[in-house]
Image (tube, rainbow, N blue to C red; front, side, top):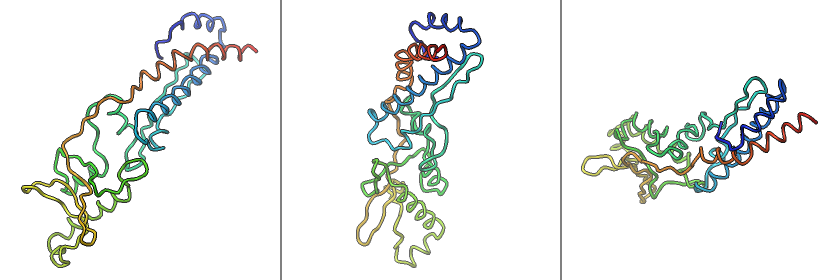
Length: 230
C-alpha cells in the first residue's frame, strides 16, 4: 500500500466497524486502484508519443477481496500482444530505464543468422510506419519471409532469378548493417542494425500511484464507511 498521510486515524474508524471493516476497506482500495489505472493511462498519453491502444490498456487492477486484510494492486499485464510482445517488455525500460528486451522479430532474425549477436533493429527510412509511429507489423512479416527465402534458397536462387529477391542484407566491410528492399529500380533501407539501445526513465509509475493514493484513498474510505452504514 502507498504511504498515505492521515491513514492511522481512518484505520481507527475502520477498527470500530469490526467484521464489516474489510468490506469498506476493500471497496475503498478498489476505487483507488481504478483511479490509479486511469491516472497511469493519462500519464502515458502525456509522456509517450502516440501510444497504441494496446499500451494504454496495459494497466490492470488486481481486485481487493472484502476479507481479512484486503489488498489490491495496479499492475502491467504480462500477456503477448502486438508483435508477440507483452506490455511489460516495452514499458519496463520506460519505468526503470536501461536496456530493452529483444523484439520477437529480432529473435527470429538472429535465429536465421541475419542479425548479428548483440545487435538490435530500428526502422530505416524505407520502413512502412503505422498510425502510432511504429513499424507496420505487415511490413515486418514481409521482411521475415524475405529473409527466410534468402536463407533457404541461398545463392543459387538469387543467381538464377537475376538477384531479384525483394529483401536483401546490406553489408559494410563484410559486416551486416541492415536490410534493404528492392521495389522496381528503387532500393530503400527498411531495417538498420544497431547496438543495444538504452532508455532513460519516462514513466514514473510508482509516483503516479502514490500520488493518487495520497489524494484519494482517505476520501474513498470515508465514502465506503458511509455507504456501509447507510
